[in-house]
Image (tube, rainbow, N blue to C red; front, side, top):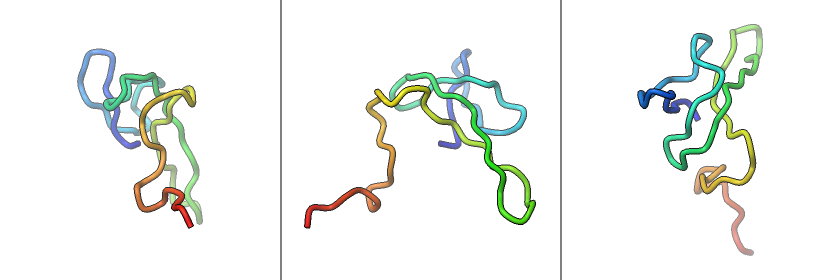
Length: 69
């Protein structure tokens, strides 16, 4: 996710200046700031990820979910 909530309750966007940990706006779980390098040396992409896999938030967009055959 690109936006989380800081410890003082304000929204914070994922960027190099964001805190290392924040709170998920959907479930209230702890999220950590992650970074990945974009192709062709075009910079970094920052995003928030849940610390644990036990959370009620949906991981994938609805169109990417597994469908029954």
